Amino acid sequence: MSDTVRSDRAAPAADSPVISVSDLRMRYGTKDVLTGVDFTANAGEVLALLGPNGAGKTTTIEILEGFRMRSDGDVSVLGIDPAHGKEEWRSRLGVVLQSWRDHGKWRVRELLEHLGTYYRPYSTDRTTRPWDPDDLVRTVGLTEQADKKIMTLSGGQRRRLDVAVGIVGRPELLFLDEPTVGFDPHARRDFHDLIHRLSDLDNTTILLTTHDLDEAEKLADRIVILAGGHIIADGSADYLARKMSTEAEVKWSRDGEFFVHSTTDATSFVRKLFADHGEDVENLEVRRASLEETYIAMVQQFESGQGGTAIRQFQEAQQ
Amino acid sequence: MNQRTTPYTAGLKRGWLDFKHTMSSPSDLFGFIFPTGIAIVVILFLRNVDIPGSPVSLGSMSLPSMMGMNVMFGGMMGVIGKIVSEREDGTLLRNKAIPGGMTGYLIGSIVSTAAFVMFGVVVLLTMGLLFFPGVSFSGPGQWLTLLLVVVVGLFATMPIGAALGSLFTNPRMLGFVMMPIMALTAISGIFYPITALPPWLQWIGQAFPMYWMGLGMRSALLPASAVHVEIGASWRPLETFGVLALWAILGLVLAPALLRRMARRESGSAVAERQERAMQNVR
Image (tube, rainbow over all chains, first blue to last red; front, side, top):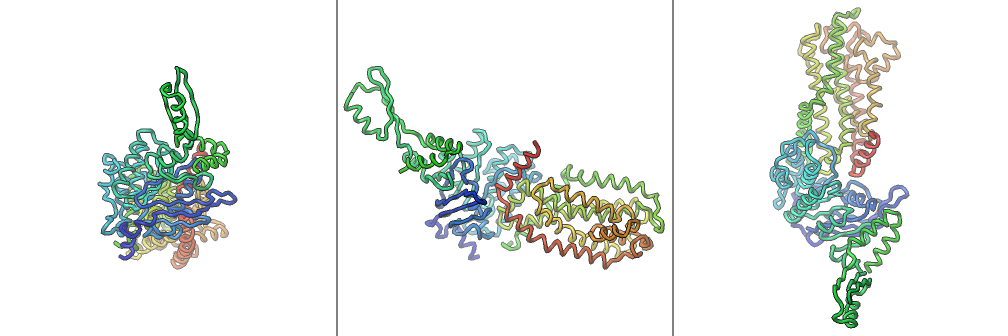
């Protein structure tokens, strides 16, 4: 019993981070995939691990899930090293896997009820485990499909079932690896709503990986950008946007003629513009380069093999 | 309900549900009924073929032998096929992400495979008792022998199947096991007494569980005088359980470590990689 009490969310864990990664390294043969990753996630936070394809996001999340052994570095997930995590530790995690074709002959509610039974002995006064199957089916919007065979579900329904499987044990921490790959815009919006509901509902800490900045901005409280084997940026979307968009484009017109000027100090430029021309200045527009533009430029360069340069520029831009 | 026993009870439940799904899946049933049906039709025609020195026909001798073969096939190939395909489709990883899930998965696989083998035994036994003269139980001891042969046979085949299954990363490698087992059928005295083979082939046949399972089933279901066409004119019960026990021990020694190794290596990207490779092979 003392084990389960310690595991509870009300435990002192509130001020210590749920995930803490320091100098994490991973090497396959002679290839370094992660060259010193550092970041933390706090309780209740939705954190997006963003990066171009091949940046090592999946490797990172699999190490945190305890599915993969790291080469070096310190990792703590819910206060425990995932390399030595026991079943009690696993009962506090939820993992949303990619959509496989597994359990095709099982029915939706039947599978959720069955998988839930494994969590029953880990139920505590504060967190009743598992999630009631009917309630869970309703939460992910599969009530109509509850008694259908899983192999008959559509792609979007199957994905919602994947989430249901991930949260059936009412996890304190939920991992989602590239959750919306292959979604149409409508399915994607539905999915985002579901994630928002989850983080509001139970104050679940969520770590998701994505290569889509838009998705990271929509879902995450904080974005951690992984490229070239380490973290190159860490902060809220607003913070990153302000940090990185140093260049601004100023557009105006005077006597019917249009002008464009790029500057790192838009405020003093505009002040001077008015001082010089006063009321002649019309159609003024000041636009900062968005986070998205900077990120896309980085991804493009990264994928064309000039990642090193792009990352340096990205990092310089932040300083 | 505590943390230690839950994976086992959940595993039993999983095995039962899994078995139910198999029994209600036309394709799974067809995979059993089709080859078994053909074999039964063939040996029905052998009911008029006599074996010199035996009181029963070749058909009646083949039926219990086939029951033995079915335990070997269903037990070993059943577990191999299950592990290999469920590794590829992500079932295994899904269970790995759950507390105690791997234990539950393993128990479930054993239970559902064993249940399906038992189902096959019951079907064949019913056919035998109804349509094959000479196939019958002469007493309660014979019932017990049948039950023992099935149980020991499952122990001799399923762990070996689990060990082999955990070594294969690709369902297309199943053929490498299937072919030798087919060949083994030919030298295990299933469809004709093994004594008709040259001695060196008899020795190879006797090294594997299939021959002994067939022999054990015949000893349970055929009249006592049918023993005269067997090696040494004896049912050799001690040798039967000895050889089967050796295979069971071999499997039980190898399987846990190999299964642990397999489970340890399972991750999302490993499943994705295998599926990608499978897709490339299809194209």
